[in-house]
Structure formats: structure tokens, C-alpha cells
Image (cartoon, rainbow, N blue to C red; front, side, top):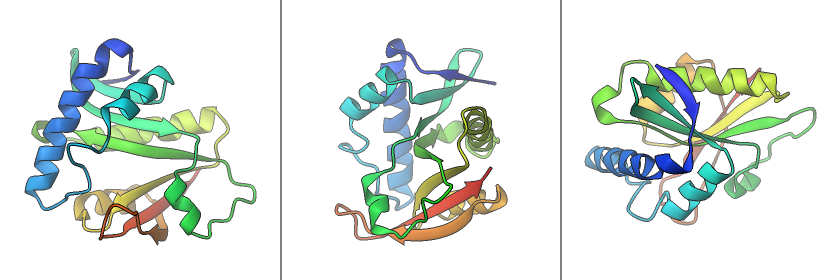
Length: 166
């Protein structure tokens, strides 16, 4: 398994992965991803900006993660100390349902941590839909700490924000 920066040629594969993962999440009652979110235009922009990384095994894309230094707008609802803090943000992370539970999400977070350290970031921040228990458990297993929550305009259920100091 290797983590590679996505290229424009990967767009269709990434959109397919997002569609399959969205369908899987929706079937489990997690409806924060849908046909409009994440938007294909945003994914394409993230590829062009060099923010998307793919977990590939023998050329097969099994997962993806978007890493960005720009703070999500919703985080401004929380009182997060910016003093001596330079966070790297995890925006979208998805693992194909056939390969979930095989350590791919952990591998992508490990990659994000190494990348963050190499580039002078002091922490990693991410948010998880409050009812996504599997993702929240993974964060706790990886020593992320809950630091707040926010309410997105388009969702009734809040998101929980996690942080890991590096």
C-alpha cells in the first residue's frame, strides 16, 4: 500500500470512491455526504491544488484523504486557541467499503502526521459527524482529543472537532 498525491487523471476514480462511500454511509444513517457534498468541483480544485492523497494498492485506489492548511469556515464557531498553533486540517477522508477495517484510514492519518511534521505543522485537526461512532473511535485510538463541536448550516446533527498535537 502506498500513499500518492492525486493527479487530474485520478478525478473519475476519486468521484467513484466518494459515490460508493456516500452510498455506504447513507445506508448506515450517516447522511452528511450526499450527491451534492462533497462537490465534484471542490474535489477537482483540491486535486489541482495538490491537497488530495490516495491510498493505492497495486494501482487500485482504496482510500483518499484531503489535507489542507486552510481552516474550515465552520471552525470559527469554536473558540480554538491559535497561539503557537499551526494546524493541518483533514477535510475529506474515505475508504472504500470493501477495504474498511483493514488499517487504511490509520495509514492515511499516519501519512498526514508525517507530512505535517515535515512541513512545520504543530497539530492535525479534523471533524467528524457526531453520530459516526467508528470514526470517533478511530480518532480516540490514534490519540486525538475532542476540542469542540460546531453546527453546520446544512446539517441538523453537529460535528465534533478533534485535534492531535505533534
